[in-house]
Image (tube, rainbow, N blue to C red):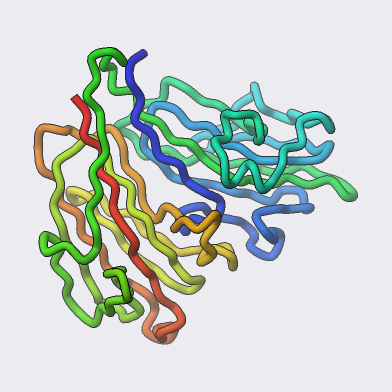
Length: 270
């Protein structure tokens, strides 16, 4: 095991899916057979949250993981919501709903939590930590992060993008595109995506569609924009090409159904 790059994905991220949406409120469900899921690339994933006397099941790539089948919380495991969403979850303010290690980083995985609750029991999913084991010894790693801001000249925009004070970029028109190139082992894009939006993000030709399913997905938690896209474990020796396209349905295109891009964070390790 070596140095790990990581990406934290909050519950308000547009890439976290809630199904059915009617069963979830504030990232919490009191309904059995309600699902919260996430697609990711990485070697490790940990999900943090809270609960009260509930059971739940975990599925990885649609296969149930027996170690977590019907696992119950007890009252002492209930975490503090505010501290869980604003502090480092490993400090003990959250409960680890699942911890998976040693996954294939070249495959896009789907992790899903399914609730099994009765009465006033509930499950609340608050934060996901995706990691990639670089295999580099911690003492030898020179890992660092660099920021790429939406207003930088290296990013090209086509269509009807708007610019906010501070340089944030906004799109609400079908066909708007943004393109840029970076060199590094990972990238995390931060943006607010209002309900009703749809985006396609392509990295080196690998496309992922993003459509918020939670009505609170446009919120900012702890004054931070949520993760819109994350990819770890890339070849750090070659440039990578990213294309972001607004694919919102024309009937739903209006200034309130928009995506606001805040920043891109790029992992440089080696």
